[in-house]
Structures are given as structure tokens and as C-alpha cells.
Image (cartoon, rainbow, N blue to C red):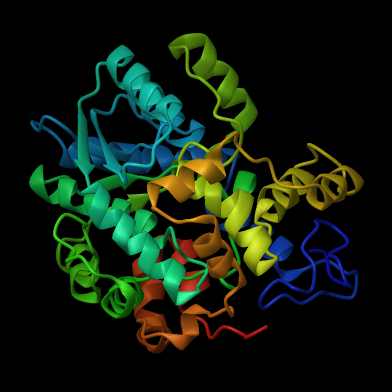
Length: 382
């Protein structure tokens, strides 16, 4: 999956969308990370000071309320640590989980262990399993890569709904650009119109329990309700491996084997669908971040990247049986022509047209800054 030119600092190559290199061979995404570190003061006194100011605002707004912060949880390391962090800073979090019914038992137990030990209430929205499977099948039939797009958007809408229900103005998200990078837009995109258009053309069941976020609802949450999304790891010194060790010691938290592998659909995408069908291996995001952070060298990262992605035992069997796909049907799906998000209706042009508005929203933490970087600039087709 490596191409001809590779960044001299990380392992991004020239197959990555919208990539370019300076005269030293360093890619623009490495420079982007450095810019974000400067803006947010990541891991420095500046960052900690900004985050403490945000925490004080959260406490002020949440005074006399049962909860003052929403924390999205998946059972993964980042969201689990986020609950611990919220309590550490004296906040009163409500843990919110969007259950697409593809969770591993490890993820489910991790959520239970963390919330019960920290005495945190948990709110879970469970989508109808036949309904969500119908959405997945629709994306498979469409031949596009984003078959799990509904999960990320469904979680976001679920978090907003919980914030409205309890009159909470702040949501914690567990993303770290230091540990994960900012995934280039490239071949992976999603929004409410995209999901609705794919489902309308290829789906068969109505979306009743799935929390679809339309553009109207997105603007309602961000502009009218002004619910802020905060990513503490953008400010603080966060080390994923140290977080894992702490979670294991304090909460008997269990590792699930790799980034995004706590959910079987996400695991299928990363281990099978994307690398086999689209020749895309998103491990380059984490591996590049590890190289930038000095955790491994470029040669080690490239060696890992050239190896096959880890595959959970019986995952492919589970996937076929769950979606009632025969071997022949699955093979047909994997061999059918590739299609991409820009061949279907989306909100992308609106986001590009409204770039100045979303810049201001990002500066105010009303949308993630990564949303502005990925969605509000014209993409280049590779």
C-alpha cells in the first residue's frame, strides 16, 4: 500500500489525499500537527492552563445540576480514560454510549467496570439490530468504503441529544491528534445526507431507531443550542500506553487488541474491508503518530505497515453470518467496482461554502477543529 514518495518524518506517502512535501521531504500533515500543538499548547503549561479554564467554565454552567459534562464511551482506552480524567478534575460526568449492537464483550465489560467503579451513570442508546444491519448492507451494495459511517454520526447525535435532555453545554471527546493524527479526508467521508442518500437507494427498512444527524440538526446543536465539544487530549499530555496501564491496574480494564478493534464492525473495516477492497490501511495514522512522538522509528513503522493488519479469530465468519451473506455474495461485494462518497449527495459543498462560519465555530469549540480542517476545504481526487 506504500507509494513512491514517503514523508521523511512519518510514513505518509503520496497516495494520501491532499498531501504535499516541503524541500526537506516533510509532509503537510506533519506540519499540521506542529501547528495544532502550538495553537492548543499540547502537553505544555499553556495547554493545561487553557484546559483548566474550560473546566472552570463547565463547573460554573453545571452548578446545581446532576451532571455538568457528557462523555461519550465505547469501552476503548481513550473514552475510558476520559471518564477517569473528568472525575479527576472534579467534574460530574454522564457517560453516554451509542450501541450499534456490534460491540465485543470486552468493550461492554470495560464500560461497566469503569462506570461502576467511578460511580458514573450510564445512558445507552441501542439501535435496532436489523435496522442498523440494513444500513450496513446498503453501504456494501453501494460499493463505497464508509460502511461504518453511521456509527460515528450516530454517536455524535446521541451525545447531542443527551446534552439537550440534561441541559448540558459541554461534551468531552477522546481524540488525540498526537496519538492518532488527523485522518486525511481522502476516501473516507460521512455526513447525514450521505448516509440518507445511500440508505434511500439501497436500504429496505425505515430508519426509526437510528439517530440520523441532518444538516438542520447539526446547525441546531452547534449554533442554536451552542453545545461545545472539548477534546482534552488536544491540551494535555496524554500517552495511550500509560493510560492502558493505569486502566488495567485501577479498573481491571481489558485490552481489545488494537485501535478501533473494540467493535466488530470497525474491526472488519480496518482488518478486511478497507485493506482488501480499497487497498487502504489506516494504520498509517497511528504508526505515523508513533514515529512523530519518537515511540518507534520509521523503519519499524514501515515494517509493521507492510505486514497484514491483525484479524480477530472468526471475525469474517461472524460478519457473514450476522448479515446473512453467503461466501459467493461476500466475494461479489468485494469484487464489485469501487465507488466513492463524491459520487453521492452530501453536504460537502455547503461545508466548503460556509468555511468562514465553521472556522468561527471551531475556534469556539462548537465543532471540532479537525472537522474544519477535513470538511471545509476542497478535496483532491486521487
